Length: 332
Image (cartoon, rainbow, N blue to C red):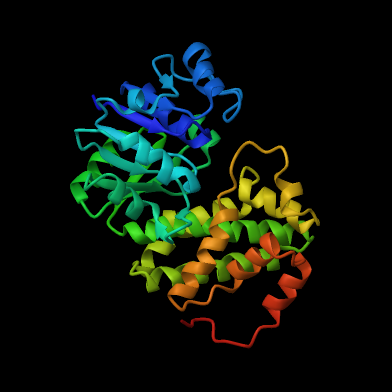
């Protein structure tokens, strides 16, 4: 058996904790919210982030980070991207062992403009790090609908170990060595999903959505290549697969938020009353800054950031995208 600590009691962290607990692994879920940890422990439910889902009775839960990670062989980092540094620094402080770290959050470190695996490798003082990503709506994974994901690590043995840990008859995990590409695909697709929701909210049709998704993938790939990723990664599960899911699926928080923005709501109005994080909001700003650092043009991300943070109207953003200088389809 593999002792696992899942750090983050949102929908995805809870789903993965439940998946592993049902496989018979000893799992402890850490949640920031006392009411979440208490309900998971007492009622085997997470009514805030995964309503209506009965969780494995053996799944333990706590709000105490040292308790959660004590004796863990694998620590799953599932906090929102903006909180990963603070939460995981506290979680790993004082550990005398070197558990494997699996990052499942889909975002970027906003202050230093690095991927979360880079951040975690620093925090973990050399502990091995892998990244799990792909087209994975939490509620569908919970209901054991056939799903495929990818785990990436430069250490192929670690990737195979995590592949075996998470694989079930309904959750098929592939391995990859391109950590950068897998992470960037998972993070940047949220920005394109926001844009796809915006064009849907504006009432545009299938032509617009197809163009947006396709050019969004080109944008993700350009930045990925500049950062050393492999181009074929973006045609895989963590690239095209996750992009299609998040930009079109009605369960997508980022797409749903984009629809509200496209209908004319401000960001504050669209976020009002929502418990879950739409990672694309913070990632839009971070992606633009990362593109500027590496001299990569990200026109869609730039327009999304302008809508989110500069008060630009969605219609003006679309117009500015369409009226840019003509270019060849493939350009750097």
